[in-house]
Image (cartoon, rainbow, N blue to C red; front, side):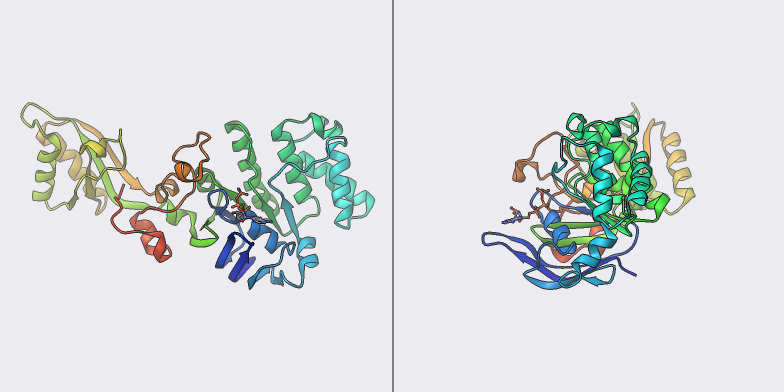
Length: 355
Ligand SMILES: Nc1ncnc2c1ncn2[C@@H]1O[C@H](COP(=O)(O)OP(=O)(O)OP(=O)(O)O)[C@@H](O)[C@H]1O
């Protein structure tokens, strides 16, 4: 079952191709749509809402054709736009009631649903004050409330954490999870912050330059591998503790891999990490016992996980958006074994390190 299906969807503006033959199926649940600024996320949402025609290809939302059934789609789908679009002179209550009425709810139901929804997003007494005096976090909550007020089956949330501080981001991400958990509403949420999606979404779709890079379950991105990363101290008897450990483990039949360097400052970058394939619990015991027999100190022994952020290299230099979440941004993909299994061919250039 899919809530969104696109087939070779393209959108060309005179100077730029915003979407380039995008084919993707999205199942119910919380799905992250990630891409650097300008990747085509907002353009895709506008096409899916039936607000902007595609140049070619087809798309269906909840089984409805975006080209001919936009009205029916918008009855069933909520939309939280990216940019500030709230009237400053009315209260949250007045605005959300208005949006509920626009969606076809009768006056009493609109008022009741508005009160419930504003409470759900965490706006209480302040909902009677003009929106113009709200903080960014409160405005984002109003935008979320108006997307939910008509009890949609699906919501599109375009960069809902934009402009929020870390605590505000966490609250908004919690709210997004609850939208699905408490009400069963499916969510398509866009972000250029990969870490957010890792925590929030069941599934992640990555686009870049309007093209699909990959679409897979979040836990495929963050899959635990079977390799252990081990760091040990040296000793007088073994001035190169790691080499001694590698030899001993290899002799004991454990499969050891070369140290790989993920970046400066990381132990692996200076060759101080050893990777060992974990066959099971006994591998942990073997490592512990071997380290003890050699008289070395065990600094770390951890299972390697591929995090979403590892799939990407930092786009900041290319996109010119450098506002502080280094290593957490979407960009062109760089690597990993985990991605290579499921990524589009162009998503996994060869030769990237495995850490
Ligand atoms: N109406 C338009 N006319 C011309 N070009 C457009 C129009 N809308 C979007 N574009 C271009 O299409 C590309 C994709 O834009 P889009 O807004 O979909 O990206 P995005 O991934 O949502 O990024 P952002 O988060 O910065 O909005 C960009 O290069 C943008 O400049």
